[in-house]
Image 1: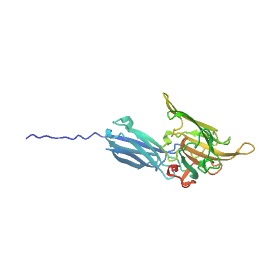
Image 2: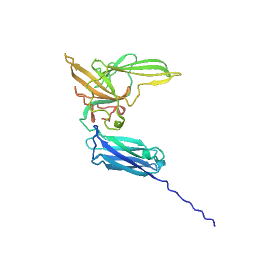
Image 3: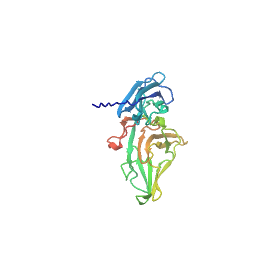
Length: 298
């Protein structure tokens, strides 16, 4: 009788090692930060959890088969009194010692003074073309006769030159009714994009410009150009500015915008002269918003 034997060779496993360093916005190390390092093995989720020590470090290790590391490893840091933060790192497919031993820095922003604000998601362009249309940030609508708004905080002017859907030019001008109102762009550092609070805690006192212009076009043989849909673009703004006879600002409302025009979320502090833009999601001054208009990020 002929006997046959079968052998199963276990796939070699290699260890990855992540040294997680938790720091605050000033770069000081943070102890007692709860860290979760998530990963996949054989397409099943797993995690290494722990707490940073007094030096702000936590070391996570795990042995995996190279073919299973096509998924990014995720890092979550949480500490009382701070906004949680998360990052991801892709180890790639196949064992690479240079990639599999690394340091991951998590920046945790301190919770300051979250405030009640007017916060709303907007995904609609101006209701009419080729003429200025005001938007009331406290009402959350276009100014009459195009909506229920009363006071113009921001002016949107959309100009469309269209031959057909594949041959057009569109320009959107975002401006303000008062010379001292304005807007300025800010970017979120890569290391802070995973923070619960992406923006600074306060809006700046100056540096505002009177308008921004966005364009979009498509022409046969030339393709599309789009300067209106950058999800990483954000803004500070100042509206309802009042000056005294010496030219000093005595009152203004400050806020921020996450996203680009016209797909963005805005946050307006209702308190005059208060530059705090740290929103408390439990205190949205708008009630009854549609699900697509609701804002949950601080």
